[in-house]
Length: 76
Image 1 (cartoon, helix red, strand yellow):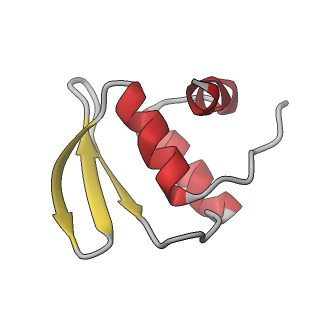
Image 2 (cartoon, rainbow, N blue to C red):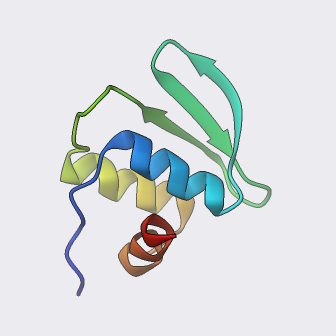
């Protein structure tokens, strides 16, 4: 099993946008993303802050992505 990467919320946000997620609204630092066929994913973006592993697991579960798929999205 691949380890979770240490990434910022902005990196996760950009990776999800490359995967077809679109911002449907923002409320302060919270960005709400949606992709047809999946639910709404909320990402709280604070400059330079690393996403905690439990939060990253929750985001992956909500999006249906695997760790490997996320890593590929972050490389592009």
